[in-house]
Length: 586
Image 1 (tube, one colour):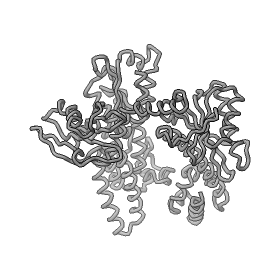
Image 2 (spheres, rainbow, N blue to C red; image 1 turned 30 degrees about the vertical axis):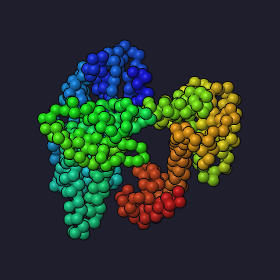
Image 3 (cartoon, one colour; image 1 turned 180 degrees about the horizontal axis):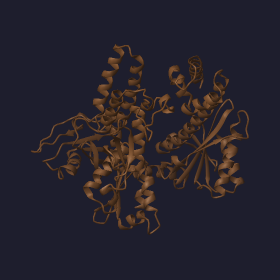
Image 4 (spheres, rainbow, N blue to C red; image 1 turned 30 degrees about the horizontal axis):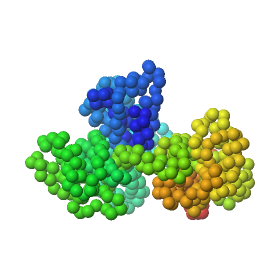
């Protein structure tokens, strides 16, 4: 199973541990499948549940989904279906939290356990527990519901009102009727009636505009935008077809690999992967092979739609094989086009099936060019500066075919003034290699630096100073040429998988360094200009920086919103105008 772990992507999804007979023993979900499965497989304590699960299992499978919400729904469905013995807690839900919209005069949203005796509408359970707290925060923010534990009368509203996250029923600033309307919207959101909610908000915006209630219309508009953003991220897979089987097929070298996703109730319910022997990609044998995977198992009493997407390189799909087979009880089918929005999800799941194939192609090219196996762990460094200001560096980590974003590191260059990329790189590598030498971080098999021969020599000097033994390469900017520590010069464009590998890791290091450089510069500009505005003292500056930590956020706010923090409107206008001018310069 540890060998199979190499194929698992760092994407959200659900995983299933099975015994030798294929019985599901445990179902789990994670926003990072590889990381979570690695935790299970590396457990060594016999008292640890993960250890017992792995000892009882002979294999595992996994299903990639789009986000954590889909993973939660799929996990719940699979547990109900399989009743895995190691999922006893989730089967009765007693240890996981619920959300309750209370039945108080001015309701709030609470995270409770099963023993909660108060009244209100209950939703859940939520797995993991953190998802309940995240959803509560989202609801209070979207619908401006109070977040205080007890509603006590106040003469003045608290900060939540001033930052527009509450309507302040404590201070009598909202009527029961208006507050109840917001509660009803939150309930519709929780029950999944997002389309109806969006339609209602559109109508109320038009009504407010007709009555010249522009502030109310603006608040409703902001709420509408926020609800739409959440809906777009977590919308069901299908509107028209909620019961279907999706097939996706793609050529990989000499093989055809594919995936079948089973969708029930609009969510992914299961996955089967398959490989087909080399054949003429459009002959009847291939299509029959694919269809037989699903047709033999179809229950004609509940079948919805079976979809086949046949994909062939850059040529696209011939009209005769772009099939969506809509099966009917008698076995007939109709042909449909496949929705474009499904392709990224299908490709991610198909990629999880054939990932080991593409990695093998990279391994083959690397060994062919450099005469040694592909490194398991690679670190890449890049320097970012703007005329010597806020000089920073990035270190990105690639391991066993995946970027390890939790191991990325950023560095502020401390000992160099002005523009000196070589000295900056030397400082950063010295700090990193010292930690490697001490055993504080894992030693890479290969270090890549962005730059030409000059940066390569800097990296070699630092490596040899610490007596480390890993390989060192550099990538020349724009030339796509790799220089090695053995004096080799490789034009990577001649080797497509190597070219993609080196450019992607270099571009990732560049992106990470540039984003940090911009953040430091904007933070400095924000603090500096706020300190220079008359009427903004230390307390107001600290409050603005807390609520609008990024210059782009402050540039997007309106003066009237900023004035709600107790800042004179004239001063608020100056702050926003100068923030917008500075933002254009970044």
